[in-house]
Amino acid sequence: MNFENLIYSVEEGIATITLNRPKALNALNSALLTELSTLIDSIANDSSVQAAIITGAGEKAFVAGADISEMHGKSPLEARGFSQFGNAIFRKIEQLPQPVIAAVNGFALGGGCELAMACDIRVASTNAKFGQPEVNLGIVAGFGGTQRLPRLVGPGIAKELLMTGDMITADRAAQIGLVNHVVAPEELLGKAKEIAAKMLSKAPFAVQFSKKLVNEGFNMDLDRALAMESEVFGTLFGTEDRLEGMTAFLEKRSANFKAK
Ligand code: CO8
Image (cartoon, rainbow, N blue to C red; front, side, top):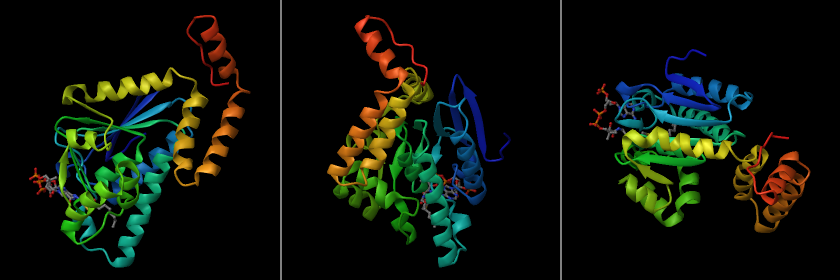
């Protein structure tokens, strides 16, 4: 697939999506988001892609937010539509059956922080910076930040970030649970690939359903969520991979999973 604003490759089942507008610090404009939407749709139906990594081109930014020059002239109606457009794409990323890892290589501001939060796991380089600076522009976060940030870090810290617009370091982001790992810039993609490869070595249905249960359970009351977990737990007992996993343990050998 050819894109103007994305670089895409797949290696050993792991797709790498590089957002590629480095001169604008990979700011999200309509053209980039449209390409990203197309690519996510294709990944959702591509069994050769078992995990995906999203990162930014250049050394400075993951994504410095939605493109302010494009947003500048929008009417309230157009802005609402743009917010809905971005939210729909980020939701598709969140709901991909495959694991998605954000490799945050620099500024992750506004829509950039929101994109990282739509991924399952965030790995950051030591030079990454996170923030929701929308209040500096007279707007609120519009690609899910007011909802995913409190779910990840709790409402108190989320409100501080959303209401001050403060930028935080990668270490602080790790401290509050916004980021899973902080590594040197040259180790960033390697670490993301290592995590993806570890997930790929596990039973595929078990990995996929772990993601789905966490995602869906968050929006349910605990009793319904626990019932859903028991349902999936039982269903997985009917898979060949469950039998293989437990048999391999008892035979003291590595399991050979087949997604069956
Ligand atoms: N949009 C468009 N262009 C940008 C953006 C952006 N978000 N961020 C940086 N750029 C451009 C700059 O304009 C500049 O371009 P040029 O070289 O042509 O002047 C280039 O990238 C480099 O940027 P700087 O010169 O500013 O680099 P600095 O190192 O001095 O600063 C910063 C880096 C701190 C990241 C700074 O660029 C900055 O503050 N950027 C804006 C950050 C921001 O406010 N992000 C939030 C945007 S709003 C948002 O994301 C809302 C999402 C939901 C939208 C809902 C739809 C309505």
